[in-house]
Length: 61
Image 1: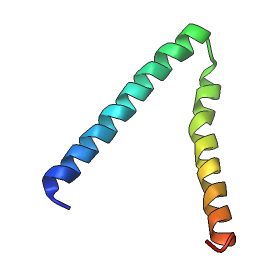
Image 2: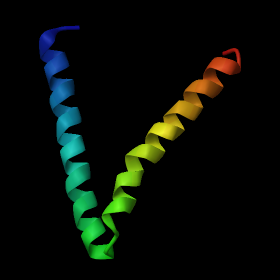
Image 3: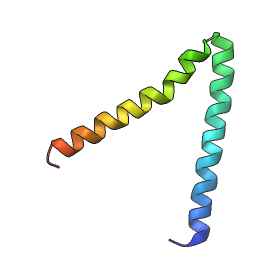
Image 4: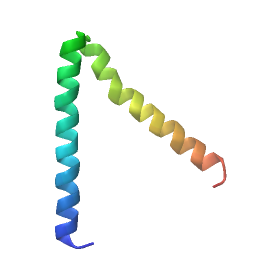
C-alpha cells in the first residue's frame, strides 16, 4: 500500500473518531448522562467484538 493512501486512511479514521467523540459529548451533556455510562460504551463494544471473534472461530468458517 502506498504511504499516501495509508496516511489518508489514518487521517480519515482520526477525524471520524474526533467527530464521534465531539457529538457524543454534546449528546451526553444534553441528555445528562452520567460519566460512568459513557465509560461503559467502549467496554460493550469490545465485548461484542470478542463475542463475534469467538463465534467466527468456532463456527468453522
